[in-house]
Image (cartoon, rainbow, N blue to C red; front, side):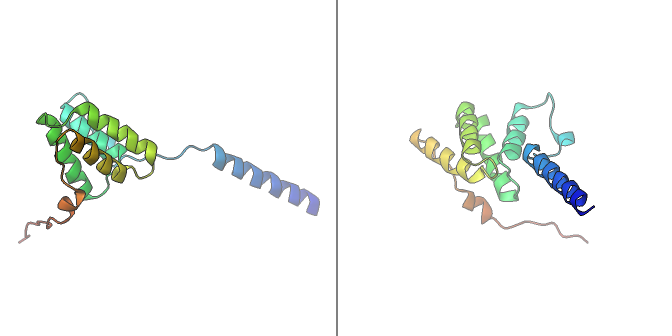
Length: 133
């Protein structure tokens, strides 16, 4: 009886371990899918793509990405450059690619004569709240 219990326990542990190895990593969207723009504005799609794929979870990070998208809209930054740097950042660190994106984009834009602000500029801004009466 003790031998059967050991065998059952070993099979259970092996099955659990195998399921952990074969399970894929869960991917979460920061902007929920019901808020994603379907056929709408390409600017909104770029912003949503950057936020979700770069895991921009804080408000300063999202404000920084809004600034980048605005520069793309104003044709100060090339869309292909932003997408290429996004892919590079994800290859560098798929779990937290945002810092790689910020540094690489700042470097590549600087080579092209474009000055980009640091994320610190967006972190130092005070939070403006509206009073509730």
